[in-house]
Length: 302
Image (tube, rainbow, N blue to C red; front, side, top):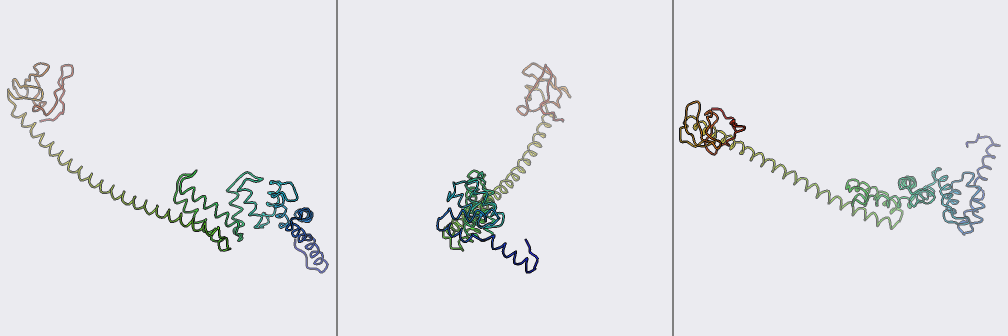
């Protein structure tokens, strides 16, 4: 609330400001001395008036069962009121409640949100916890624990973990420094794996190219040989048909008589007159009859 700058109103604003915090120091002193009854008496009215510091202390008392029955839902209520006012310690504590499912359903996404808000304000504990959560996500993606293995996603979370843990370590958090080193080690492992995978992929691509080139070379040879064989086959068939005589062996049997353009052949199903353009040298085609009708196996014209 903004006050108009008249002398009377300024005195009233000062009075209101002083009364809004009256009792806070007494309450905090009592809380630190574990005189929770006095702390509750002093803090509860302030918290109800919207004092974020008192709301956070009241949240602590309900969370720990100090001076009041332990009640996580009530603790969450007071932490949230203080956190919504941007109080970093309350935001951190609210993140704790979501992390462990105390007074609220366990929700790591919501926990991360509150840790980040506190961490952005320089809260070392929030930075440390945020770093731990991101480090654990990195481990999950790195080894495929509960999620598809994804080194790129793992590296992203390890880098985020290093960022927040380093901030916490800069505030003399020795545990955070230890995790910074672990996260960096995991990043080194991932980088080595990615380098190895890249090398394997390059080698695989090189081998595929070699195989494709060799396959193309062999296919060219095969086609060349096939064309040659077809040409040779055609020459042999044409020569046989031009020069066929009685006594020659054809693909269907012994040639008995030749009366161009026909030839009589002793087949497995008796003697048959066939067109010379439907005959082949012995062993170069199959001899097929369906219902007594000859079937040219290749249909190669003269």
